[in-house]
Length: 148
Length: 148
DNA sequence: GATAATTAATTAGCAAGGCTAAGTAATAAT
DNA sequence: ATTATTACTTAGCCTTGCTAATTAATTATC
Image (cartoon, rainbow over all chains, first blue to last red; front, side, top):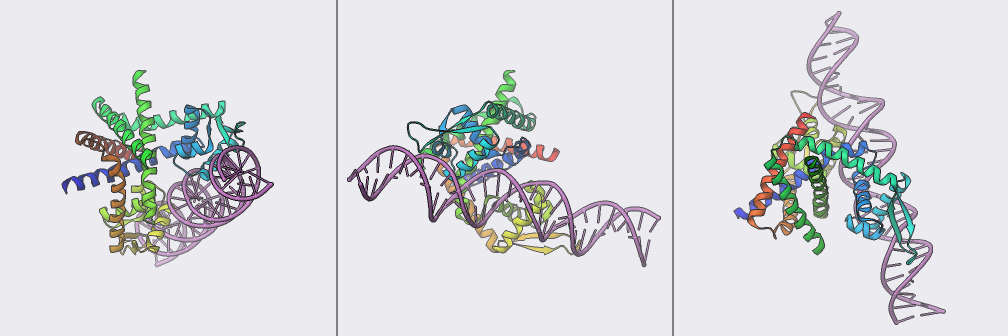
């Protein structure tokens, strides 16, 4: 019972902390003229290389129509481009442009500057603690999304 | 230099972990017929008690018009109600209803069940580690949003 | 006490980003 | 050859963010 209630409380705080963290960086992202969904998708393409629309949607945990529109916007802004997959002409391959890679890095910089301001008050030991916890969480979340 | 790059990496992972965590619970929230913004605002009212619209907007880090519409939706669903502040008749006081408190608890349960599944693979020591990190982060984020 | 300035909330209207359902085109299977 | 499946897009809905402009109440000033 104490176990359950503690876990519930932790889940609540995790949720609320995530919400507030994202609201904090939101201003920076939109200042770049690129929203979080676009930035996140672009990041997958830049770091992971060319990828099909379906795979990108899966990676971002959104439905294909949603990703299709996000890619529309990225293309319109010259941050990514579609290419037909020659081997399977139903499929498209999404790849970044030089501009896309540059904008992504700038977005990261802005974001990290904002978060760094928040984290700068923390002691070295606290930073390490957060780092370890993030690694733990990522592992747990990934396991979850793989299973379903 | 190593410092900066480490901090940048941590910020990136914090950001991405937050996004993925929220996407994970999103399905559960919308299953309750209540979106994340409404749930979060309702939670402030339920746990913090009656509050003015402006203060609620500030607490949720959104603009008053955004909050006004969120409260509209909560009212329409019978989860909260507006009351005129007798002392200052420009202001409204938002308070929860019995149904609001109940729905919030149900939402929490659904969410915690989902997160618990993710966290259930963690050792007790890892849970404590995450708990400490969350507390640290909350402190840091709060300080940030107070300063601006 | 009347007028002006400020404050609290709302309304109107836009954009991003989530969804489902339905359509099109290409490939795979029968 | 026909049928089924697959990849993606289009159309249309909802939520949630914003700014600008409006309304109503309070506070400050003359």
